Image (tube, rainbow, N blue to C red; front, side):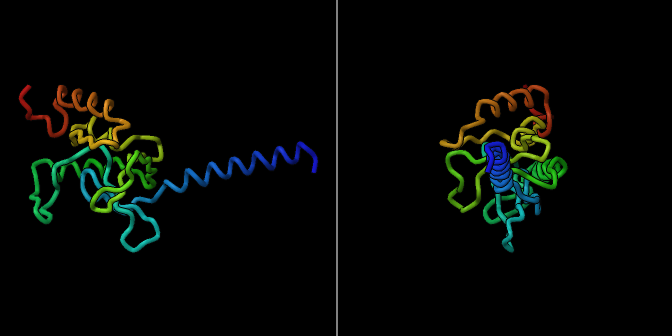
Length: 159
């Protein structure tokens, strides 16, 4: 085999490996569970339950020991309105929580960081749990801006 053919074959294999690794973390959206939790299609009946790292939203419904909270339905509706059909997950240090949910930063097909978008729109608070702190500073800055601009659930906040 000539060196140019080998080089082309090598590049093709490298590119296909990159595509495969990106696709491993990309899933079709099954449902928005609430403002900080989504379910993705992963080939199982239940789907992949993903808890978005670094954020917390008001509860959208009564569930076990938690009661529905003010702005919970609005937070869920907003997340649903901004999610694309495919979601790419980015993991931090820990990829599972104590309930077995996948922990991830979630990105739309266009690169929109959904965790950050929820904070910027005022529908999520920052909830940083070490060691998953990759975007913590950015999240805190976005929260301060959202509160100052009285976005989302901060619309009635006293300065």
